[in-house]
Length: 504
Image (cartoon, rainbow, N blue to C red):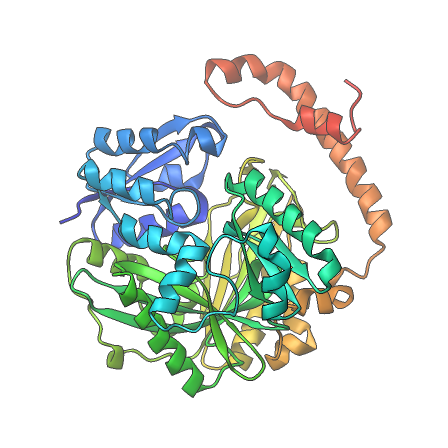
């Protein structure tokens, strides 16, 4: 039985996993980079160890250091959270070889679904509906022929892609060659792999995913759906469960297909199948995420299940604790991702020091976060500060509750997307539940702040300049001590130079 788990991650997901472990009486080990010495997950864990410099490649992505830490602290298992090494088949295999339980699917399942071309091939063999397109690396000589066979518009995608990188939409044949070259170049620089494939572009789709669990005995169940169509730059910012778009018949059929897909690759643990759904409720396989998802809390809220506990239960070699007939969605849950970013400046990250946090409270309110008064947001990692989740008996009540808690949630000292999220909750299409993946771009004017953007940006630059000047002066006093303490020296000086705010 697992007695101690090392969490190979940071921030809110590390804390979220540790809380479930504490409820189960399992000890936890935190790993952290130099930039995360004061992070809350480091304080919360039973034990903690610094594994490297601020850059993820020197810390959270360094397999040798993480495995060494797990053995040093005698951890029985490693939970990867999401991001970083969570979908790295080599890491899962190395854990197994070192006698450490990897809380997630096996390496073979990851490899079967990690590459988008092999994933399409496996799903086609399992008779899972996929978007019309190619199932092999696309060569330039085949570009025009394949495009004409599928029909415009098409989308060229990196086989190892994610987050919208290595992806190009083509509506005119004359743009094919340029889009192909551009997608391959970005894929190479982002993932070290320039392989691409092509798919029919589904106009105005819904992005709907099905959560599932599989155990070592071949049992798989689905945990119903999540609507994830509110996206900026192909990255989700609002999710809800159940989807307000699909009907019960489609929901159950998608669940059955997800179970079939998971069984086809002998999946163990928690995973997600993502689908594109058109306006006629035809659905197509998009990809499988072989890890816990950021948006997993809304599934937990409508089902009353702790997915991290179920992951650990499965990793202990136990059978699933639920049958499909035992599960039912109750009520409605919505999640908003709270990010430190400037929504009026192309969602640019907004690092800095948080001066004050005022978190909302009340029935049906959950906050998965890691920030606190005085916390300095590192510039090295994702801008997400946490997730705000509400549950209510109906979608209408859940919307009302989310509006209220977004009004109450105050984070000062840095820019956040909280006001932007409030405007989403008031948007007509969102209220009606008829939005698609084009929601952000179609409602861009309505979602922008109505204040004088140019004036506010000028004021922000002035504040930034003053802040950087303060930091630079402060560096002169603390840099020697920082070196002695093996802490990272602030990079605001470099940032100020790049932005032309400092002449030093």
